[in-house]
Structure formats: structure tokens, C-alpha cells
Image 1 (tube, rainbow, N blue to C red):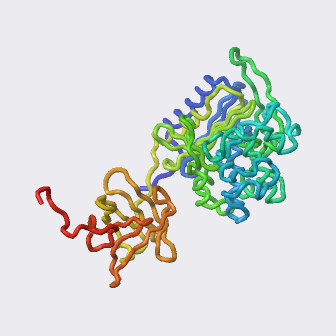
Image 2 (tube, rainbow, N blue to C red):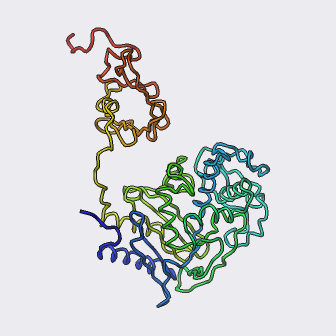
Image 3 (cartoon, helix red, strand yellow):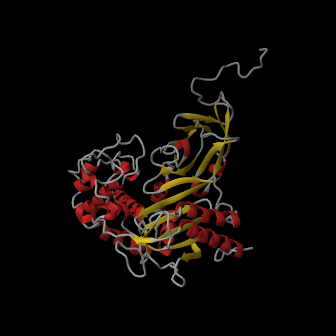
Length: 458
């Protein structure tokens, strides 16, 4: 029996519509547009508006604020993947003279560089970027709020600096590089630095009365890499699919997976932050993406790897609807009402007797672990029962395996053989795994008592 992901059930569609309709009313926003993607395909679009017959659609641009930071992070990682910089490089190596050159590229990407949250007055989101023509105007005099690398402290100027880094290495403007290296390859034709019709206008809604005030839409200048972009639900879900699978024309799967890993511990209630991506836990579900706001606009993109569901919510109000919660709820509605249908189990294309012989029980001291064979000569090690250290391993050309995740990420797994070629034990980062607990026939560090196992009365 096959399964089509092209259409949601009527009950699911109604639940989604009800959620955004409630959000538009409760948040008192002029308009709201949302969309959901499942298994890489857009399966639902919805919108609400205060003007009959003028609801936005999937082609209507809204300003997306800090979702722009994901794009900037992708551009920086492209530079790393091309060997033009290293994430541990100090900024000074590639962009001298900023006054914050000792912080690393990695720290800037993960908001752990300790830089200030905002640029100096006047309020940068509501004033033209021409007021801040130099990086010194963006960073201000008090550039450091915290010691670099110690904690997560969200910094808009930090991403302005990353945009300048891209420009310095590429020799072209951030907007030009973005267009050439991300938007065009991914077919994101409705994402731009400046608004393009049709687009929503930004509004402020009075907190105590149902009246409106138009918000300015300024060109942010050097702050653009932190929040300039305009986009649509269709383009953002196309971008979400890229952030799940990768695209070798832009950034490979391994690098987008790296973006999703938390880069530094965050404070209570802050969630985690990867490289340009927020990582939040919502009702037992891990959501990745970003929130965004600029005067007149709110935006959120969330995607769940486990459920293979993504949702985007865009609205044209300075405050009101909690779009981060709404987008999370849209993911939850689809994931709970129509859970992902697993791919059929299939055997490996071939059986390697040597690898099969390695599978099964292995003991670290007295702790039983199971080694399993995975695709592409990979291995997976984990505890037989309960929680504990484990990891997936990828095969290397020299006959070893390298840990991909968990406690053993980056560690080397080796098969140690006796002189006759038989397997003696596994060496994992100096830990010895034996077929029997403290096997006296294996090279157990410290040796094994010659009298062996014994009872209490021995």
C-alpha cells in the first residue's frame, strides 16, 4: 500500500484554518498568512485579513526580520566549505580593524561572541541604514557585553559583522552574493532585499484600541544581514526543505546538519542556538528554524526533522499574534493528526561477512552494548538497556570508523586483532570493548584478576 502526501485530511485542514483564524483575531493583526509542508511538499496554505477580498496568499511578500540570519549563516558556511576560512578563525584574520577582531567566526554565528544585542541609538529598525555607514557605527563604543565563548547572548550587530565578512571575502555586496549563491540556485524568486509587489504593508496596532498606525520600512544598510529580507510562504518552505536535506549547489547535507546542532549552552527558557538556527523544544518535539520581527512585521519558520513537517507564519503587525507559537502549533496539528508514515524496511544491498561478525554484544567493563551494522558500512553502538553513551559511526578508508554524534562524536573506533587475525577487542577513544565482561583473553587495561569471577563466600 502506498501513501500520498499531497493532501491533508479535511479535519486537519479545518484545524489549521481554525488556528490561524484565532491567531488573527486574538492577535488583532491586519493580515496573516501561513503554510505547511510535509515530506518536502506544500500541503496547505491559509490566510486571514481584516479587509474582505484582500487576504494575502502564498505569493505575497512580508518582511521576515531575523529569518535573514539563516541566509547569512549559509553564506558563511559556504566560505568555510570552500576553504576560504575556518570557523575557529578570529574575525581579525579576514576583516581587520573592527575592534572585535579577537572573536571567532563560530562565536559570531552562534551568538556567543559577547557582542551587544543592538546597535547604538537611534533605533536601527526604524531608521535608515545611512545613519550607520561604517561598522564602527553599528558596533558602537561598548562592543562587549560578555567574555567571548562563555554564554549565548543574541547579537544583531554580530550578524552585521558576518555580512561584512562575506563581502570582504567575496569582493561583492552581501545582497549580490545572497542572490547568486542561495536565491537563484534554490529558485527563491520571491525573496528580495527590497519589497516587490505584491507585498504587505507594515502596521502597528494600538494596544488598547482597534486602530492602526503605518510603520516605516527602512533599508537597514549594514544591518541588512541581520534582518533585511522580504519573502513569501512558498519561498520559505522551499528554504526549509533545503535546511533539512541540503543541496550541493548551495550547501551539502553535512553542513546543514552542522547548522542544526546547538553551538553553545543557553540560559533558562532561551532554547538553544545552532549556526544561524534556533533550536527549541515544544511539547516533546524539537523544532528548528527562526523567529523574526521588524516594526510592522512578525515571522516564524519552524521545521521538525523527525516529523518531516515545516510551517511558516507571516503577519504585518508590530506586535500581537505570537507567531512562533502559532507556527509550532501548525507543525503539531499535522504531526499529531497525520503522523509520518515510515518508509518500508528494506535489507542492506549486500552482506559483508566481516562486518556481520562484528555485530552483537560488546562489553565496556561490565556494561553491555550492542553494535549494529548500518548502511554504507556504517556502525551504530549503543547500550543494551536504558540510556548511556552511544553514537553512529561512518567508515573510513583506513578501516576505522569515526563517530558522527553523541558522546563519541569525532572519536575513532578501531577493530584490534590478534596475531592470527581474529578479533581481540574494539578500541574506542582508548576504551576497550570485549565480547565478555572483562574478558581475560583480551587486552583489558589493568588486567583481569587471575582467579576470575567469584561469589561472596569465596
